Image 1 (tube, helix red, strand yellow):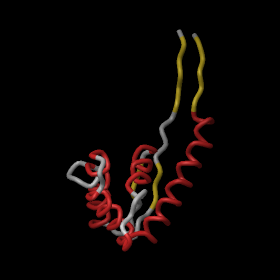
Image 2 (tube, rainbow, N blue to C red):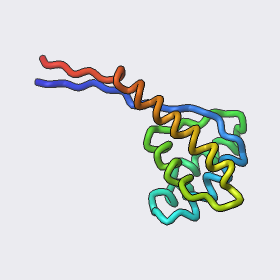
Image 3 (cartoon, rainbow, N blue to C red):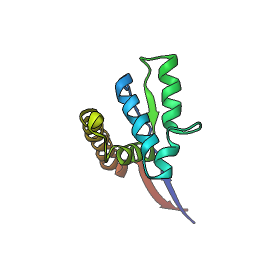
Length: 112
């Protein structure tokens, strides 16, 4: 029988209130329902908002998918959000690249 073991990364980071506001605003305005759902009750951005309201200095935890959705949310910012959106997109893209580079060390296949 063939087995495959792999790890799923969790990326932790802190968000400034204005960065979270931009993500929430652009998510709510997005054309894609998956991106809009992120800022609604039950969505990961909604969870980050609650977490940051209770403890502003805390780190939020994100999956690869969460950051990928954030990058999509940030693709077309409005004029007033463009600076923060571009910075966040660059940071999230860099984090995703690091995860992709490191993920080769997180898997192993074997047969028994």
